[in-house]
Image (cartoon, rainbow, N blue to C red):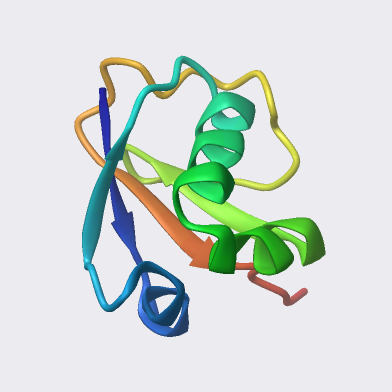
Length: 81
């Protein structure tokens, strides 16, 4: 199981839960499990989200492992330059 911290406005889709647990080995597995467990997250995930795994931020890195991570955070897609 992976404990995922839900950041900011994404919490509305989890009923206000700041942290949820899902069964996942990779970021892709995690996003699929989150969308299934919390259907309100699916549209945001489809638009794009960022995932922080032990302090490193990933976008579109579907095969990055999350299993065994100390901290996983789901964030709205970060933009910038």
